[in-house]
Image (cartoon, rainbow, N blue to C red):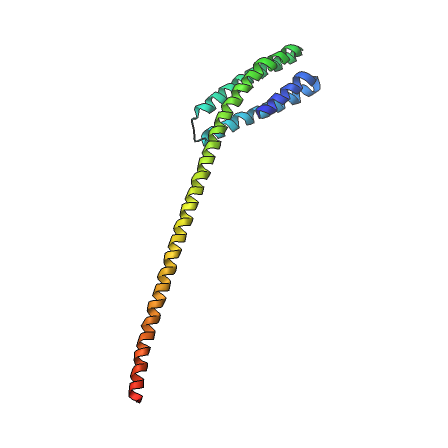
Length: 168
């Protein structure tokens, strides 16, 4: 939303006339609402140091003051002053805002990488445990099958031997 505001301000300063100014200002207001709404949502959901978002919100507020001043200058026909204001102070505030958001993004990215590494390690551990348990089950089953088979075959051998003795 911040970049959209900046783009709208560029359009306002460079290409505005009385007809388009109202619609451009309305677009800026719309993006401004979205910007602060998105920052608030991100702050609530963020797992790290929330002061990053306080810096971002204060920078966005300072940027709002700057582009509001630039809009006033354009209304007064002072496009050159508005351009200078946006080029200097506006870009400085955008850099501060982007730096704060980059810090939050880096933290979130690092958390995601750590989560994936942990998930992969857990997957590998569970797979290894499953293989071990399956191997033990197969060995146990084969042993049980042999014991049962011998339990049936040995009495049959004895019975056969007894039958041969009786027939002789």
